[in-house]
Length: 311
Image (cartoon, rainbow, N blue to C red; front, side):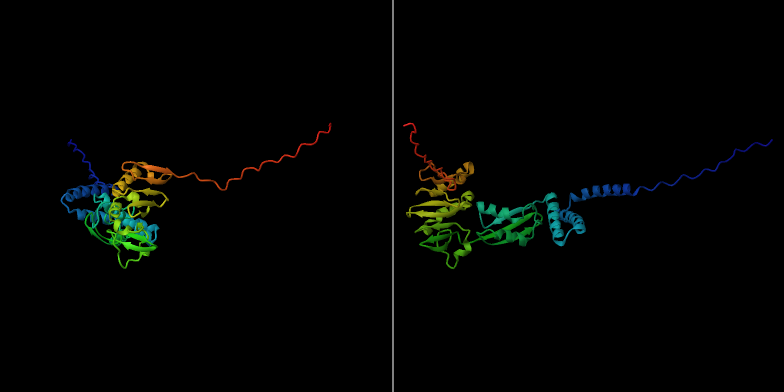
């Protein structure tokens, strides 16, 4: 009997590998690209990093704004978005100011960029220039943006420091109290006023001191020269501050400190006397009489008593 040959079974070939889901593939490729980008960015110029971030960020914001906004809102959204992207990338603006010192320099820094903007793309150079020139003591300004994060501002301040009122005549004066010819006083309504005979030439020390005393400056209505010997400060709220004949600048610095700590210039006083060194005498404002109050009732006039009927 012939031997039985083993039966051969046909084996099906293994199924081909399933294709990777599209979302998983995108994530895998994205992770690989991010790892590659991280390695490359270490040696990349920061300007290239900012440019790339701007392109991606602004494109996304523009696309979103285009769906539901007008042209103005789109422009604002793109500017604000670019500003946030650059600041978040590690490039907040550094503002350099030339031409002024101290508190005036701080004033310029405060107004260069619009509120809420943080980087050099937060506003155009023209807008920054207009913001600086809106300060009443600034004659002109130039603004330069230096990538990636520097804003350089050059300020030319006005010659006019104050308006001098003498015998009913108004004259614009410079920091030395000298008249500025050809400067109409009506243009400089926001400058401090100095009043009285001889006030112009004597005003140089107090005008220079006022530059570094912002709390007094924002409340001051006028320097008034008293007897050609000393100064009073007339404040916008009607209060009078009496300065000493000797060292009025030191008394003004003391007043600035007192305002910072105790708010004396906003208190309910009619007069603050600083004429004695190291001492402040405050005169309270008199109580307001209510003229609309009802008058007291008139005295009652009783009728005369009736005669006694039993008499």
